[in-house]
Amino acid sequence: MKHFINLKDIPVKDLRKILIDAKDRKRLRKNFDNLEIDKKSPLKGKLLLQMFEKSSLRTRLSFYLAIKQLGGSTLTLRPNELHLSKGGESIEDTAKILSSFGNAFMLRTNSDKKLEEFGKYLTIPVINGLSPSSHPTQILSDIFTVEEIKKKPISKLNIAWVGDSNNVLNSLIAASIKFSFKLKIGCPNSYQPNKMILNYIKKNKNKIYIYNKSKEAVVGADVIFSDKVISMNDKVNKTKKLNDFKKFKIDMKLMRFAKKDCIFLHCLPRGNEVDEKVFSSKQSKVWQQAQNRVHVQKSILLYCMEKLR
Image 1 (cartoon, one colour):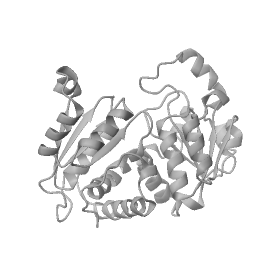
Image 2 (spheres, helix red, strand yellow; image 1 turned 90 degrees about the vertical axis):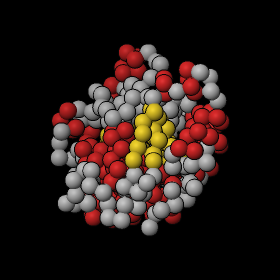
Image 3 (tube, helix red, strand yellow; image 1 turned 135 degrees about the vertical axis):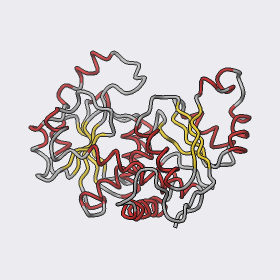
Image 4 (cartoon, helix red, strand yellow; image 1 turned 180 degrees about the vertical axis):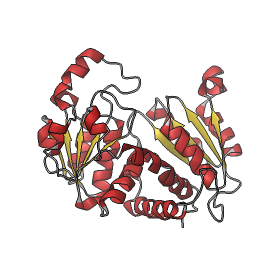
């Protein structure tokens, strides 16, 4: 049994195995319909339990299809209907019940501590579908998309992030250290990664650079990442924050400082951090990026249940 909580805690050889398996699985499904099951039904009879404490579209749909295509099934639990929230049942007791009925538990949560506690008490794998500090399934899928489009290992590419320092960026930083790729971050000075992340970067002999100007971050970039400036449940002065990021909007003028074949990726949903001309351009690969979540999450499920080929 293997959890999938943070990229920094997973060996890079295992992450690479997941990506290789996802590539093979995507190739083998070229002529399949969404609900057709993969050959050999590798997770036949397995049940994925899901719980979303935060809004979800892509993660919810992609995990649903992922387990279905592997021959298993899924059940989505609503947190407001469980004793965990309504009746004060402990995480330990809830985890024991989940472990008795399911084969894996995917959690999107408002609490990193809750995720850690579930990991402690569950006897089935827990998968982080997004937490305040990380979004590992998103970033591993994004690496898959980058390598699929660029046809080379991400370690040979220059990656840029323009936007807020959030959970997605935290996972991208962890990926940069794991896969050894150059990462340049462009954000206002007061929105840099927190001290814990900065110490993590410093400790790991990185190729990560932080700039307070968007242009400096994207010069020579093969890929530009971004995310919403105002994240889900972001308890800030929204008017002030949007104003602080005015000079960090990704438009065609900024894209011209990157390489000519630079691609734009965004985990979605989008806000006004990206201009419509960029978002709808040929350089934007956001829909391919979203669709690839299914393939990578299938391989994550197989990895967690120790069924990876």
